[in-house]
Length: 87
Image (cartoon, rainbow, N blue to C red):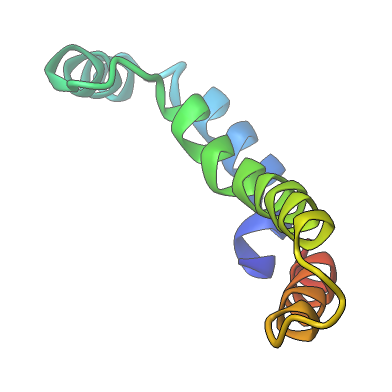
């Protein structure tokens, strides 16, 4: 995940540069048109980066709803810490 995140900007720059090539642009267009999601490559690339912050928010909400005495409380806290370290 960290390597992906560190190279995200480089990926966008590379896509932008290669998009000047008509063959590459044609390939991207074909993939977009064939895709069921109808998301461009740039949108697909940001998706994994957006997931971790969402998971942190979900875990924080779960922690608020979990009593301190519940056996999962410490595990949820550790999950939040782990996610924050990755993000």
